[in-house]
Length: 254
Image (cartoon, rainbow, N blue to C red):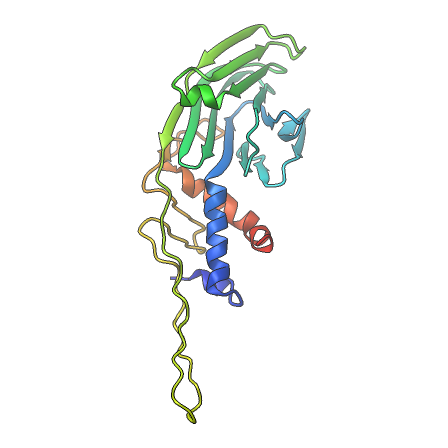
């Protein structure tokens, strides 16, 4: 199996360990949202920063975030502890589905809804109150602006799901130990072959771009066309998007 050192031949084991730490940190602090047609999706924070499709144009004001226009999939890593508005704007007449998940440490707050009617220019807003949700209260505020004029005609409150996950625990790589021989024989330093840090839960496999960070945490997804897709690992999907885009940026930040 291809090892991570094959992709970073000039990096030491401590450098790669640092990269793994950063990837795990990013996976444990994130916001995820996906829209299943018809419409555009965006996220906005209290500072006015936005990501997604805003007024028909793709926008991204966040440093560690990305938007996939084909999947209508938004990811924000290392988000501020802020209030975010998840907005859906209708571009056609039909029904849509939405998935929202906020991961912070060992807690995942998730919300899913399906078959929501939508028409062109109609605006739906979702706001999640994390404190209320973690206290077992209804913490999702839903607002409807029927014609996009800024006037809210309908509101509702929904529940969210809270999951507790166990992050991977792994041992750091062993140091290289030298064993000098008595003089005058030249000192010989035996090398210890590098291997990916051992773990019962964490696995890095660059060839397939997967990083399962928890033992089990799956969600059912519906494609943008509305067709059901098989259950998949939420962390696997997250890692497959995170690894190619942020690996070099995270290494450079060390």
